[in-house]
Amino acid sequence: MTAEEILKSAREQNIRFVDMQFTDLPGILKAVTIPVSKLPEVLENNIWFDGSSIEGFTRIFESDMYLKPDLNTWAAIPWTQGTGNDTARLICDVYLPDGKLYAGSPRSILERQLDRAAELGFTYNVGPELEFFLFRKENGVIRPLPHDKGGYFDQTTDLATTIRQDMTQALQELHIDVEALHHEVAAGQHEIDFRYGDALTVADNAITFKYAVKSVAHQHGLHATFMPKPIAGINGSGMHVHQSLFQGDQNVFYDAQGKYHLSDTARYFIGGQLHHARALAAILNPTVNSYKRLVPGFEAPVYISWANTNRSALIRIPRYTPGRENSTRCELRCADPSSNPYLVFTVMLAAGLDGIERKLEPPQPLEENIFALTEADLKLKEIATLPVSLREAIDELLEDEVICTAIGETALEAYTTAKRAEWQGYAASVSQWELDTYLEIL
Figure 1 (cartoon, rainbow, N blue to C red):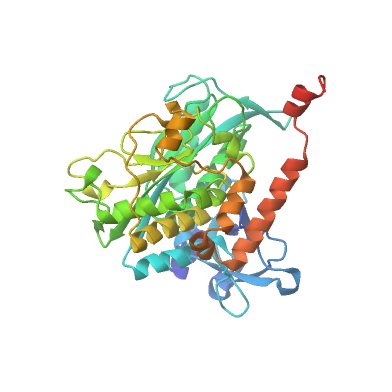
Figure 2 (spheres, rainbow, N blue to C red):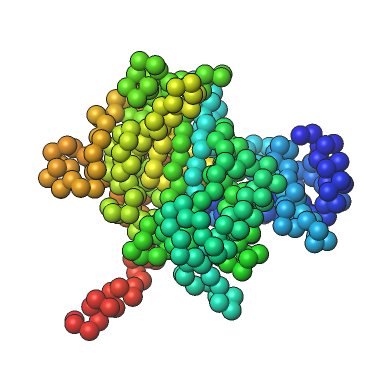
């Protein structure tokens, strides 16, 4: 869109305010809100803000930064329309006073990696599937109680279906092309899938998706959470990511003669992601709680392997459909929706490109239930596992030069410092499980 088209749209939709949005390193949505009367000036000259209080941004003595809006992200926020405070949003890139993109901004980090892929002739396309829970509120207090008792694909008679439909309508008004919506495996768990596309657009959509889902849930008196494992003993929430590389209009993952119809390029890409999987975990599974989900028995893949039909593998190859060669893709299944999609797509792409450049062959695909294998079987087949804790994942990240380089020194230092502090806070806390297990007998 052009600035003139945005101003026209603002007038026609009676917009009163505009949120200038961006994310911090953990992926939390931030915004500077302006009255619409200031929009022409901001579109021409951008808007300054203090970055010193934003997680992972500048230090206090170098705090001045400015936001430059991506005009193609203009959208009215549906749940504000007709309130008298009708609001639109623009997603922004973060710049330093000297006019350079801020190296620690998650969106800029992804843009930098996409530029590297473009230099190699590739466009990176992704399609994430974000699962989430809807919990009840009692007197404004969030309770970890699912609002329904449905299971996988159930058509329940409570509010679940209506809420998903309301969320879908909001997403579509935000220009997100929803393809399917359904109840997930656990009670109170849901999934709404939107169309794949280039990684930057999809990362923007994923951030918008979380914002919209939470906002619509709030309108229904519920709380939507993307916490990976909010309830012990049932399935947690994942963010499976379908991915492919294109050159122009051609999907370079497809080869009619290849195993599973995969090209050498696709195979090396998979090899790269498996090679770097333990380091990727620090970004794809970024919280202490993430590792409560990554345990055998709850459909979350923990074994570093790949396959075609085996859903216990870390990377799955969806079945090929004749005539749909451009849909050839691989699905990385370990990420969870607490992660920052800009960083997730950055490190996934960096790992895959490293595999292509070094021609890293993946191991033989494993078409059996890995969860049923014994420790001896796993050792014999040389199947490694993901880290079992955030602390272990951060250690693995810092040992991986390729992934560290993709994130960049500025963001890496801030991210790992924050995550070590998160781990230390968790390690020093005393849980209810410990009290129940030890207090009486010791």
